[in-house]
Image (cartoon, rainbow over all chains, first blue to last red; front, side, top):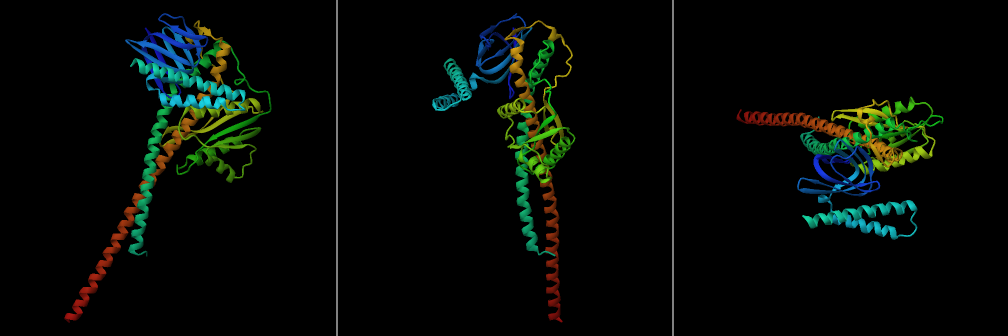
Length: 137
Length: 287
């Protein structure tokens, strides 16, 4: 059994939850962490994080994080994370179309483009997660 | 001697004031609760990041531009956290005096950034001349994105300009009754000697390399420190305001009591005089 802890600067989302089959958005692509994994440190990108807690599957969106595996206990410090069950789909859709509108404007700097693309990516991820959650529950 | 009517009007006006202070106290109390929760909730993340950064730095003997002392004449940037609004007891005065002292006792050139207008006007009224007086509104709520934006600004200033130190000055929240003005040296990051715990000697697999990891982690570490200062300062402000408003409510209550007593005495005296006049008049007629 893995012991998963997921915290952000604003709240604790998961504390020492017993889990199996953990999927994290690793630095070089999706990582599957199972019991008995080697001690490991990595940086997480924007992406979906999920694990199985008993019969239940839980999904989270994560935007930048640090992940440490040590003796089957997994600590994830995420800059922002959200439980798929709590994602406000309308808000995410609004954010998505707003970012898209901004990207179509003229005279953006490279930094601006990167910023709005990140926003677009985040909103997209949240929409997908929330939709999946609604279909399955 | 004021007339009974004047006293009645005064009692009414004090009652209004008391209602206002009581409402402000309750608002501050609920905001304080939220700010305290924010402090508690932010702790695991902040402690986690701090541990990783320190462990990585010492075990991999890494360095980072934000940790190295700059080889330049001393120039300090102070960041003073106060509030935008008053009516919070000694909160702003204490932090401003403390900041004034710290600034005076620091060698070399120095500039200040004010968060919250109150400390800025304190310095302005005392005619302290400083080159940079950037004023930003204080955060309204304890949230991470405000801390992040502020940190990015500070790091940019530190990297692009010739500041050798950045110092935060804020009220540390002990309890609603006690706030302690504190100085915290933000940049360069002081790493301190970490005891080499078992964990640091453990063989970890790193992905990406430790050098690249520290790159992103150090920035986040600085953010958590700034966040702490903001959260502590906000909690202190609400604590101080709650306290000040509670005292004001109590004082208003005492004032109302004493005025009511005077009012009743005067009313009684007036009635007595009237009665005496009537009885003596009646007696005069009977005689």
